[in-house]
Length: 332
Ligand SMILES: Cc1cc2nc3c(=O)[nH]c(=O)nc-3n(C[C@H](O)[C@H](O)[C@H](O)COP(=O)(O)OP(=O)(O)OC[C@H]3O[C@@H](n4cnc5c(N)ncnc54)[C@H](O)[C@@H]3O)c2cc1C
Figure 1 (cartoon, helix red, strand yellow):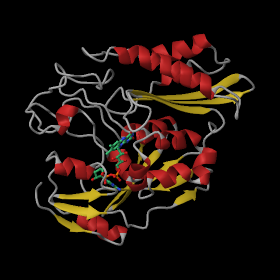
Figure 2 (spheres, rainbow, N blue to C red):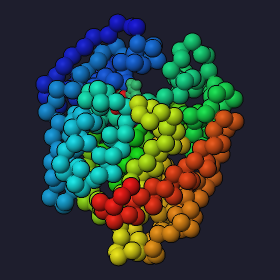
Figure 3 (cartoon, rainbow, N blue to C red):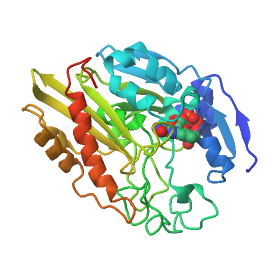
Figure 4 (tube, rainbow, N blue to C red):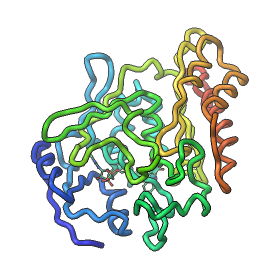
């Protein structure tokens, strides 16, 4: 592990000043970054610990939405009464991630910026990983690619984004609030994570030195009918092979609007507006759910070991929509 210096600022302004220095990196709960530093994948020269900044509030917004401070832990976010009441989809997604101990440490800001779990990215003994070492190749394309992308991949990288929280945030159309020393900017979640293209080393549109300070959730009509379904190798403490955030706004038994996002299939949470629009204006049926699932997976290009993800994702979408369609409090 490389030596690095460390500071724990008390104010956001001080954090931004320190974070704008060359070689600086913010550290939240440290549950991802420290593993990457220990493995030699990341070599920050200066860690700016933002975990004690006064950014751990959940606050109701005047428009009926909710602001989650970036330093709130995944546990506290999932258990907050307003999150549970207004955004149960987000609470479910958060609680499906990692383990209790990790969720106690992990922050909302860090969860947004956690890096892929691609084995070739983590293994510094393996020479080919364009994300870790641009221009070195992609070991996963012709290697063991069971956990990798089936959508939006590139010649350079087929890694997936591993977060559960971000899949729910995508369906809820959250906005990431970021600051640097010059001011604040708001990034819709759909524009926050990048597809790999020719620059797989870049995961997000966050600029160097920018600090995530909050996530804003718009008012949501989806509280009563939402389901986060995660399919994984073990019942807990495992990343998603495939996950689905499904949310329905119902009028009687007619779907007024729907939101669908997939996790575990691409370098960012995957949404296809046509799939959501296809569900609107009619009751949800097995046929309409299956047809939305096909639209969501349109263009999927699996690799040698992950073709199973296409059918798995389609079935998971149908199941999540059916669960979301049940009356509130109905049996699972
Ligand atoms: C064994 C294990 C299992 C896991 N399983 C799951 C799972 O099933 N589902 C899931 O979603 N996640 C899972 N995780 C990942 C976990 O959710 C992340 O490690 C965690 O959310 C990262 O948050 P953190 O605060 O610890 O981030 P850190 O490790 O502190 O930081 C992560 C990244 O974010 C940057 N960063 C942190 N805060 C900010 C900020 N405010 N502004 C700008 N940059 C910032 C850091 O520089 C770093 O690049 C697992 C992790 C482990 C170790």
